[in-house]
Image 1: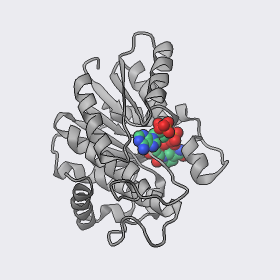
Image 2: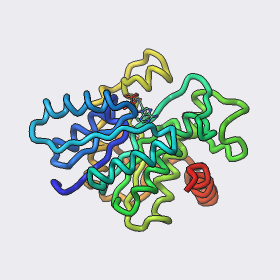
Image 3: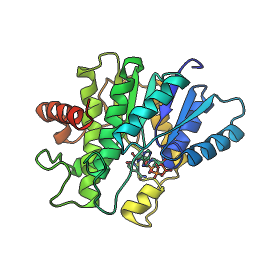
Length: 260
Ligand SMILES: NC(=O)c1ccc[n+]([C@@H]2O[C@H](COP(=O)([O-])OP(=O)(O)OC[C@H]3O[C@@H](n4cnc5c(N)ncnc54)[C@H](OP(=O)(O)O)[C@@H]3O)[C@@H](O)[C@H]2O)c1
């Protein structure tokens, strides 16, 4: 495992922090990522304290800005390209916002940024894990209004982005044959994202939600590429994700939005 490098996006907090910890404890070299350098440095310091001898590095960039993702990939190139990418970072927005690239913020951070990141790293990757949500089953891709100028709600935007995560993992095989890709719902987990989206409801501790995701990232699963997991169990995704034409269309639209 020592020669395996994994990039875990959004590993300064919540579930991602524990995915990073578990993969580092298992002997992988982990690139800790967040949008703020001070938070990445703090997470690195804490992880180095908990896991003396672990191989850890940090990288910071905002997934909601395409130029920042490209700059981040340059930084990653200097640290050593990962074979494994865990697209974990995510937000649940409480107000509609449009990014400087003209994208709806939730779709930008949760799907378009990770899509661009995956494409830019794809030549070195053999495994991708997208942390999606059971909320994808309530989502639809608003192809005719992707910024959701009409009818935006935080939940509809989140569900659209999480459906895109599942579709992305399923579609990767048609574009990058060497990559095994999965998507996973981690359960209801007590994090700041949960509080932002759903208020003070109870959930799993983040450390309890991380093991099934870390297992997929470590290569311990034999399920076929594209499989969606719910709470660690292979599960059929929503019918919207099983629509081949919609996935093909989402791929093309994502390339355009990511300016690839
Ligand atoms: N919690 C749940 O119940 C639940 C359920 C289903 C799915 N999920 C999924 O699980 C994943 C992790 O969520 P979580 O609950 O652990 O949330 P969290 O505790 O809020 O952590 C989110 C991580 O993403 C980072 N991030 C946010 N916006 C970013 C941006 N623009 N650029 C780069 N990084 C950014 C955050 O950085 P900062 O530390 O700077 O904020 C943080 O490291 C998400 O994809 C979410 O959709 C969560």
